[in-house]
Amino acid sequence: MRGLTRSEARNARAAAGFLLPFLALFLLCFVAPIGYAIYESLLKVERSGPLGLGGGPKEVFAGLDNYVQALQNEGFLAGFGRVLLFGAVQIPLMIALATALALLLEAASARWVGFFRTAFFLPYGVPGVIASILWGFLYVPGISPFVEMADTVGWELDFLSRGTVLWSIANIVTWQFTGYNMLVLVAQLKAVPGELYEAARIDGASVWQVARHVKLPLIRPALVLTTVFSIIGTLQLFAEPMVLRPLTNTIDSGYTPNLHAYNEAFTSNNQHAAAAEAVLLALVACALSFGFLRMVGRRGRDGE
Image (cartoon, rainbow, N blue to C red; front, side, top):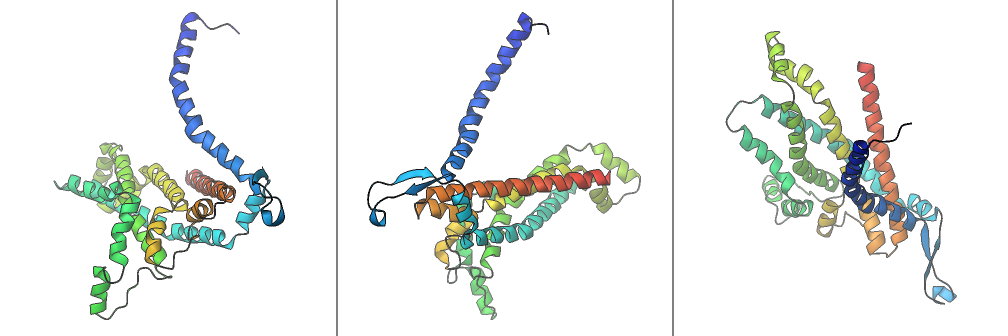
């Protein structure tokens, strides 16, 4: 193999110089925290002497004990089941609503399209904690105007009961992220050449047929992207149940996996078990995301 010329070597050094800052940040902010979490999950605190009071605690290698403990914890597993049910209902509903809004705004020719697009996106700019507080005012009896209006007609509404609190949280998440997903889909629609729409209309396609047979297939990558982001976000559900927890006794310390890991680390002072739960949560998120991508890719090949 011939050696690099002086010009090629200079270009290689320049490329390396541009890549090094990114690699440094990637290692520091992504790889290092993951590695440290895995390291912490493999340790446990051991105390010696009678009743564990014989000396200072020390960390020892625990192997997979923390993972076994997490998988045997009924509260942690119940939280996983809860967020999976949440995602199975909320994600399709949110993506369908975002798609409908994107198609409507893209098809409209009114002068107020920009205003409505901004209005639909605006809830995404509200932090999750603030959004949960705002909706908490609308859920709590005695404060909520919805509960008062229901009482006047004889309906008993309890947004924070055991059977409805999960869907009250789903409402907050849908309100907050539908506009974001809509904007991603609108951006994909804007990238589609207008000639395709014109050709479909010339062929006699109706507005509904253009949306179904032209627009929806062309925004499929954006739909896949928003769905994957929604799957990951569902498993990370934390702020909403954390904020609503003081308002009801139906949300416990393990209501979601993230909430359970948080309480293990900062309430029970068991950071090693919390690290194992965080690693398991990341593995499940990766498995579901890549499983969805694989399923979509297989269907795309079959469709071709």
